[in-house]
Length: 215
Ligand code: CO
Image 1 (cartoon, rainbow, N blue to C red):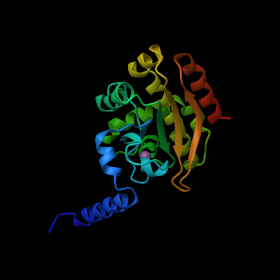
Image 2 (cartoon, protein in one colour):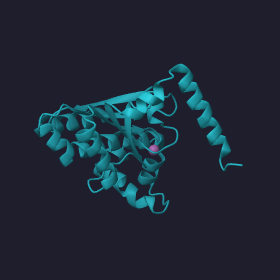
Image 3 (cartoon, helix red, strand yellow):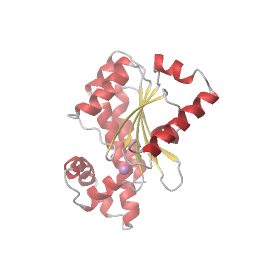
């Protein structure tokens, strides 16, 4: 018997269902992918990128890591972005965090998990940057959720500051970067109203987004 047979069974069912709806689906998809969007999200199993926005295979290019962090020396994330922008010529990059994020919570509360603590150090840097504002939020859930939002805003800024985006905008490649947060409890996305489509929009858009979070 195959190991993890239940997953192969589910896969076979899924493939049959899609083929019943569109017999050419996989044949068409195997020839090319043409996504318009790059999703940078959290690895959390409750935040499945395609399902949340109702997109099919082929429609969303995806990078996920713990707490949706964009680090300037992370070759993995940078390679995904570079391929998405320069080769696939996607039009939108969405950084999507989620409320009640375990990584953000661990960063805020200094909970030690192991190696991942080093990765979450980047989120701790965000919490230090806004420690004064965060300390004024007495409800712990609200404080975590505020850091989830701030983390998205900071990561959108990081995306915009990569050479990949800077070069794309320099050569007039039409591309926008967005910051969203997903609610685990209602399945709904919230737009943090940080949409950056040009080099000269970065500073104001970032400041407005931060101001909105502490209104
Ligand atoms: Co998370």
